[in-house]
Image (cartoon, rainbow, N blue to C red; front, side, top):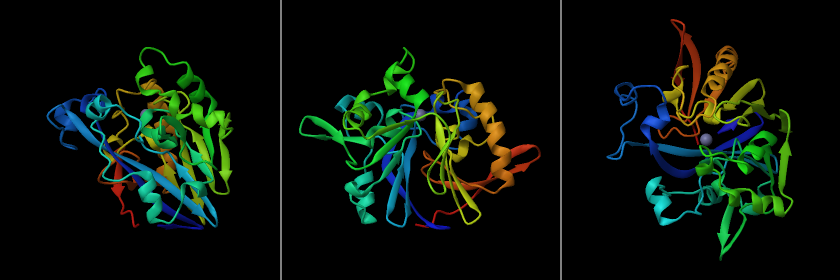
Length: 280
Ligand SMILES: [Zn+2]
């Protein structure tokens, strides 16, 4: 898809299936079931939609999906489905792993950074050997010092190999990573969670990440049970949504298997989504 000066490509890493109750927090199943159908184990299908941004010779990737470093048991529990993966998808656009210049990680949950590294024999190595990988300091600290509730999703092999090779860049503030691509702190899901604004020729696409994982999560109280600070998520949504609606940002939903993009508008004091089509 052409977006001002940029070429944007949706890069899928397949799907994972997570518990529907956990995905919708305090929303009763009777309501969320109208939006998505759970499997026998009450899990719902979640896409892993990464985004490749191309500008001239520069390739920037936002998030890397869940990758392949899992045990049989983990593959079963999370129902990890790789009908495709980020490397196959990048190949479709003739981008070799060595040609990726930047990787932005919104946060270090395994389904967002698992593709940062890959297995080579029994060694874990960076998937993109020439890239600068970017993460927020708060997220980096929390991932390295997890607590009993967060430990199950933070796997150090997703970032340690980057650090050992000097590929990791830890940032403290919102920053323009390349002209028109700006990371924005959007805490709540985790304290160090960030989203990415892609601005060009008066148009803004917003990679909202887990501030709003699917189009079904647009209503303000539809907040994941996984969020570490759900009330912060609510506050941040109340700050971001009005701006997104007013300035007509195209929202990109990282986990939505059906409807990866749309525009926000307000109707009867509630936010609704006007779906759009991703033209690839
Ligand atoms: Zn997450």
